[in-house]
Length: 160
Image (cartoon, rainbow, N blue to C red; front, side, top):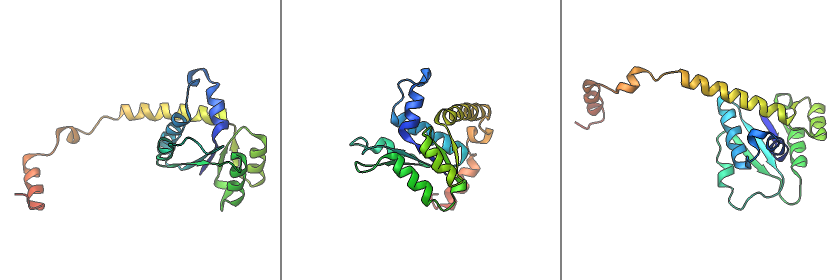
């Protein structure tokens, strides 16, 4: 599980020239894409209650988006998630916040600074996309099924 300090990562990414205008939605989409490519799951925690319409933030397979609400800060939620995790040694905590990284260390979780994680995301996604482009579609997929195969399936489903 990857546990991410949302606004900490977003502010770090915004300082990068190529990503100056990135939104929280775009950030979540990119992270979700990364998680899918690595067959991992993650949680990203943001301060506050978030936008009224959260549909663009919460429908990302593999990425759970959490808002801290008005009574707590994201840091508090992240520290609680680290402390209560049943296997904190398997956690990867993403934050440049010293307090969060300290909590991660005390619980034997691995922590990485936000910029280091973002560089890994971008590098990994570029490699993944290159590999996807290099793998041509199998000829059978492009060609489709034969007339005989179509007839067999029609018979199988009683659609003769």
